[in-house]
Length: 342
Image (cartoon, rainbow, N blue to C red; front, side, top):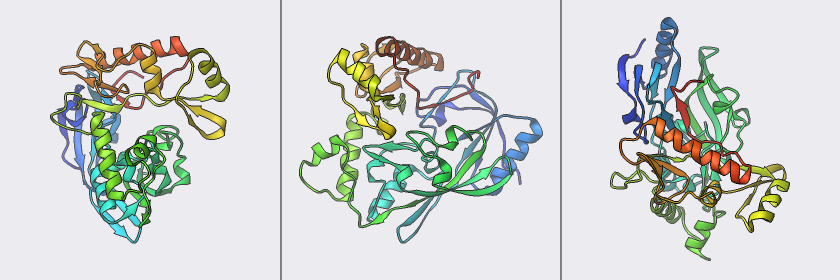
């Protein structure tokens, strides 16, 4: 059964950046049958397909997308003991709040992150010392090659820092339908992140207190969607924290002095992208036409009002080029770019 197909639908309202042109074709899907019908329509028309979730981590080109945008909306949360499953279209923060309310530990530090459950395995969403790869057990997907539904276990997803098969080796193969997590009933919140440890000092917080603290910290950085916040139109962190060999880190530190850092696998070192950006001369509130840097968080590029995708890209490139010239490090971007020439 084919779902209702719309034409020339503006995409900006479906994104947190509120930027971008229209989709040639657009459809909302809430069931697995709808997903199959959507791909049958795209195949018949010879259309490229883009899968849209919460729109919190994408930048749409000013020209829009000349294909079919499938807005994946299967909702619902089911729970059995400490195993909890969310539909791909379920609001992520609602999912976290529900988990905390059931005294399930494992995602409390990921409170306040905008978007849908379906987006979490794609980029191995993480914050405040916690990543979804630590708790995801399997991901139910529509396999575009086999034209059927499959379940991938954690190892099959090949999670690494902000990466999985869904945004790398099999970017255009799978459509996430539902995600299952194994949490810890009565578990303690994760306290590996300095901001959280500083917030609670020597106290041992509850899951609820940890969630509230994360929301408070994120809100202070304009990383929670708030209609009254002038920095609200963003895609969150626009750049990944670069991971470099220890020798490269030592060379930079020898030239620039002490640098905040975190250990990474295989003897690598993770450097905060925000530190690199700030040391390259970009201040919070930096303006570039109608685009700019958040007044509360250096990693967030914002739509200051009426920004175009061209302005966002221009600012992104300016930051990358300046950081690259100063530190010989290329900052990789986090958002997915939709409708741009490949």
